[in-house]
Amino acid sequence: MNTNTGEPIQKMSFGRMPKPWASFTLETGELVKADRVEVGKPAPGKVVTPVFVWVTPKG
Image (cartoon, rainbow, N blue to C red; front, side, top):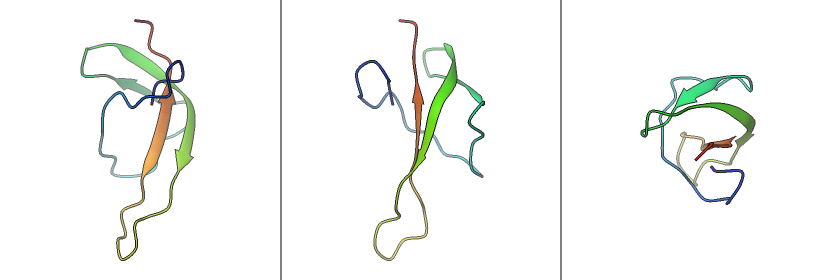
């Protein structure tokens, strides 16, 4: 999620919970640092929990 616009930037899959200080490389090749990490609730009957990582891209 983009902290400037509140819009999703891209979807990623994680094997485990990302650390709040983690850095990610976007599809554009830009390296961004996590500003905050939010954990959502899984859909009914599902075990996959959505995790929203808020980042501030420079562009």
